[in-house]
Length: 360
Ligand SMILES: [Zn+2]
Ligand SMILES: [Zn+2]
Image (tube, rainbow, N blue to C red):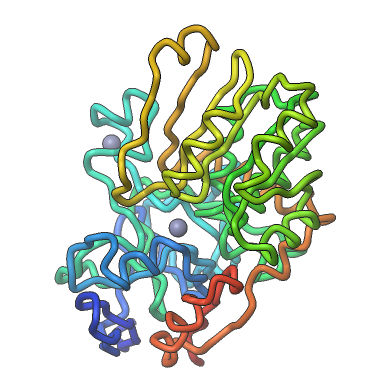
């Protein structure tokens, strides 16, 4: 394969993405070459594009990628991360991080923080390292990437966000512990929050209260399993009323807002757990009263990215959670050539995800 193909290159905030052509590589060793089917724009792509988050440029953004295998390196395992056979032509998703399996972090069961990681949609371009982002025709899957074959019944729109939003929430749900019979508060009704509502309900939570400042986003969360919705001003009274004044067992912070974090910390009951996921950019500090953490037996957990097991759980969940309208999360699909326009559409808070597809 010595043809060239297109990648849309990000050179810094304030500059439009640049169309560039690079040679299509032949996978070596255990690399796998994937033709991209589609890539959805995640909140963090938008943060990078708009300069709220610093990334090493030039680079190719996009990590919620779905692809079809077009070539497999000579040493690659012919099975996916679940043990199913893997072959050319298979539609696949893959872990956002390729990990080495040997470093300090990998040995401590944190492959998502691997010291030698390759993170798709986050890598600076280098010769031979052009195909790492989703806003392109191809992606070259590196050694240490967990690949999961996507069941045929999952549409592209449902499957695209699996390796970021869904897998991250699978990790957050695991950190929450057993949710059967538990009362859960979800702050933020973006795709992370909607996914958390659906997964918490599917995991047996009896009450799932969704908090957001936007009425339309709250209304949508009910279709994803929220049992109650609430704005910030009514939060305290709602929690008191629906928990006999005891507070919730679990609160997921998925909005990244320090105000939301303070409110939901105050909503936790005895033995409550606060799972922080949303603030992947600098925020103001929030006050923490040590005595309250101690006397109320609170636990605060941070979750960043996820391990391969969570990607498997994400795909299994999406394949089984068909009662939730995940098919509606991608509000528009645009061709790769219109990637710049896609970012302007993604700015609209009403659009959960904008998808981008390479041309023919
Ligand atoms: Zn993401
Ligand atoms: Zn490692």
